[in-house]
Length: 234
Image (cartoon, rainbow, N blue to C red; front, side, top):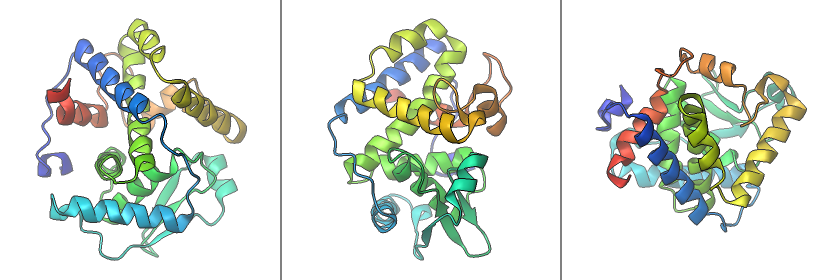
């Protein structure tokens, strides 16, 4: 497993620790709220993502990305209707990005799809690699996009395990990030009702996509890994 290879443990968290993780990521986003939020071109997304992989390669050879190939999806309207943010094309070896997505999603999605190019098949593992690369990027909007994507996962988990804490936490999120959540939600409401929900993706579908049983005892692997990466900071 990739997490094991990268030295990330699988210690389980309790609800209190999960809420602390949520606070940690909200704190990060609140600090990043004033970053410039450009709509990157495809070339910019590729170049900044590649720089991120080059930077991470210094910590682990796994991140070696020596033949960059990142392209927009062929028909973003159809892909959006299906509810796809991007995909890896094994025939061409390209990472394909849905350029119709809200700009906040694009940096993280680009790093996520490149992870598939590097041989990562599982979605949660691609999320982990995408997070590590984009959150450690020198570009502040890539950092923001990474933390934003992860906060959505964490909030889902909190919402399932402790709705009361979810409401309290949500109230502490800066208005810029709330606007991004709303834009996310509006985008999917407009293009794909199955993906639309309070946080931008239907809850049950989200659990199914991630092979998670519904219920308070389930854990998303990505949230588990985030907890283990950051537990010393909580």
